Length: 389
Image (cartoon, rainbow, N blue to C red):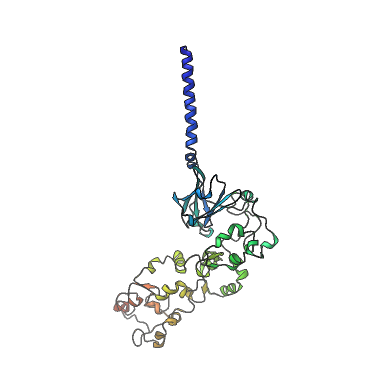
């Protein structure tokens, strides 16, 4: 073989080696490439994400992780059908969850999801895009198995199973103790959700079906059934902010909850979220009604004809639990001392009442007093001839 032929053979071998190396790289690193593809940041208003796809092996072989940690099988809902697999994956409220679904060496799904309700949009980082499902494009793969065209009887279905919403959303009510009758019991979803596709602030992928056009101001929808509440709220002199904003869903879940009155969370915890009262709950002494009944033990969360949403004026409210003080008349804490007056000597813009000396919520001192020693409390009013009369 001459030198020219030898060079040609060596060149061909090098080329083949390079090609073979490239092929091996792509075959062995396909999952790695998938790992490094751009991950979408999605904002979900649902407590879960449902992945729908096809797999090569048994459904039990799927590996589902959140933030790179395997999700326990009892936290998942997996369903296998003739042509697809549905995996329902839970999300944690108010935080991002990097969710992935892997089948053997193949990465099938990976997205960064942030779960928060639509009326707490301020929790969601700017880079997350709202996830809108019920668009024409998104619904298309589902039409082979699901009916997504609204029929006349969907507004008041004969049974839950007859509702257009039931097949996909039935799990939403699983484990929910208190369910809104119109939603989780009667499945009258279309009394609140709009059947026609419409443009909204979140219409990134086209018009959306089943939205609530009122957004956060849903009171008109609620009042359609809760007429007595509207009459009650209209009579209030003082109205709580969420009620004034017609934002019932700022406090109540319109579908269901594990807390009474369909509250989003335990009542005092919810009040603390807006009113920044955590420090109050951590003091040495906390008033028993607050511990037992929460804020609503004394305050009406919707409104009242008395200040700070009390059922009656401050003194009368205290007398409900402290009738002995009421019997004493103007003789507390000593004979002849008034318990009420037109003006508080320390705070001239309010009346003299029980809360002039006692903190009605909590205190570091005995009897919920505003000062450590009784004498220090008395001096606040009885100094330089400044006395209540």
